[in-house]
Figure (cartoon, rainbow, N blue to C red):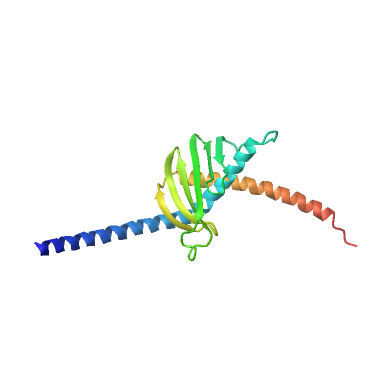
Length: 184
């Protein structure tokens, strides 16, 4: 009887080891994929932009319009638990973040942020990044689908618009500075 129990325990251990190995491989694949698609960089940037929309939309007397097609802007600009939501192209988007000190400060400097992306109120990404260099630390949930390219295109278009405006502003400032420089 004891021999049968030992054999059953060994078989169960081998199965458990294999399950853990496969789970780790799946998690590593997801982390590599999120990093390669640069979602670990795009999501925090898009949250910052959406929070700017929120602030601008609430400023009284300011002439500001939301990016084309963006409606129902909402959010909360808190350093520890920021979030933003909006509707674009008939889809409801929401990004929730939570920043906290690293539990392993010797290994991970700075804060650690958890970002959850919801599309039409369904979780499609749950990732944790470091604040220092938005390095992806791990992925807790991922549903790959068309939302990825839609979100990256949307974030890229918003970034391009912002960079173009900033570039035009910089060019004007540079011209004013240049006009005030005189060589004798």
